[in-house]
Image: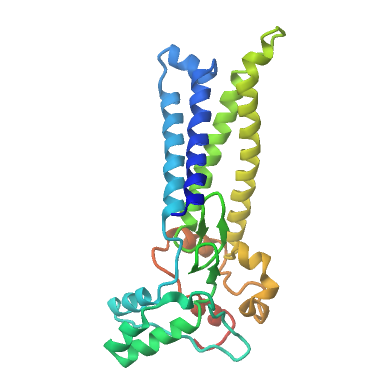
Length: 284
């Protein structure tokens, strides 16, 4: 983890903890419930805040789907299937990573067998479909969506579902926190009005801004997921060869139900080439 990543995560943790703590210490609905001995809602609020922080660190620190061809070879062998290298039509040129060349231990595979060496070489030369190299992470990422500066990590095939869960929990915390901050505002005119309300006003303003950002992020991601596309593909459709040459607007779209099921319920990496060439009536 770089120094920048540590500072970003420390800032997120401090802000996520300071705002709820400040709300609990002021005369808000939560504090009034504590005084009456009604601890259920304050406890749930604190647990939600802790859950959002833990989800943040989980998404931030986990492997987003770094391309590791040696793992795909092993996974294929464990299933008794091997690794299928699709036949690519001449006009479809998949990207080659000139930055990291996917960092395969090719020499080790060469020593084991010629078949493994051939498979590894193919995976080394061509990125999996929908993968992209992130220059900040210095890795190719499967089903690359975007690099999130607030997470200091990419959002890809492995951590994208958990990223949506994190956004959902964070939105609930923010909406609840906004209501709590508003409940503590003191509206009677007095000389101490600003002194009494300054923290709650700043908190409400920050929460309002963060709520808009998180809500827009969540809605846009859910829309893209329902279409089985990514932020990168949506923004760069005209520059991605396998999308530009496809007869379909979105060759990966399998319908909303299957798209959502595959995104949230699939526990293995997807061979997107199979879906792409099936959709385009090409041999796999």
